[in-house]
Length: 229
Image (cartoon, rainbow, N blue to C red; front, side, top):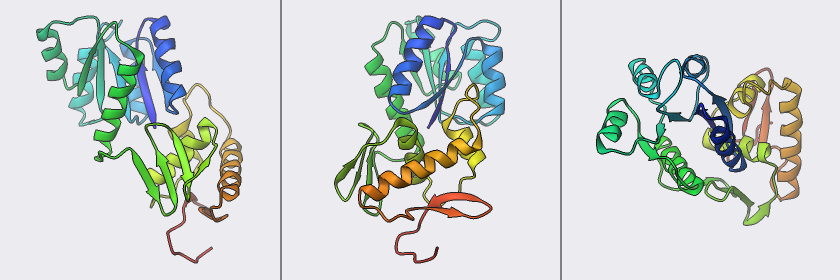
C-alpha cells in the first residue's frame, strides 16, 4: 500500500512519514503543490495525505485538480484551520476526511486505516487466502494459526498479493507498488524479497509454491486447489 504525503514542514513530514512507514506502508513525500502534482500524474497511490497550506499550489486547488481528472484516490486533508467553513471547503474540494493540527499520530493512523478499508470496499481488517491470514490492523501474519515473522517489505509484498490474489505482478510493478521513487532499487531486489518470503512461508508450513512464478510475466498467489506448476 503506497501513500503520498504532501507537507511543507519537513519536521512534521518526517515524523508522519516515519510513523506511517512503521505501519508497513510505503510512503513518498512532497514539500510543495507543484512537486505533489507531478507525482500524482506519474504514480498511483492508495491514499494521499494533503496539507492545505502549501507553496506553489495549495492543497484545496490540488484536490480539485485531482478530482477533475476523475482520480478517486482517497484524500485526507491536514490543516491548522479548524472552522466549520474551512472543513466544508476541504470536503467540497473533494477530500474524503479532514484532520486538524495539532493531532495525535495514533488518530492519524486510525483515519488512514479507515480510508484504506473504505477504498478496498471491505469493513474487515482480516485478509485470508486458504490457511493464510493477515491482520492488517496489527500487521500480523498467520499460516494455519501459526504466527510468521516477516520484515516490513516482506509483509507489504504478501499483503499486495493477497489483496490482489488473481493478479500477476511483474517485478517492475512490484517496485512501483512497494518502493518510493527516491529508493530506485534494482529488479533483483524484488527477486531477493520473493525468495526470502517464500522461505519464511515454507518454514511456517505453507506449500513452497504458494507464491508462484508465471514465467515471462511475474508472480502471483497460486490458486487454491490448483495442481499446476
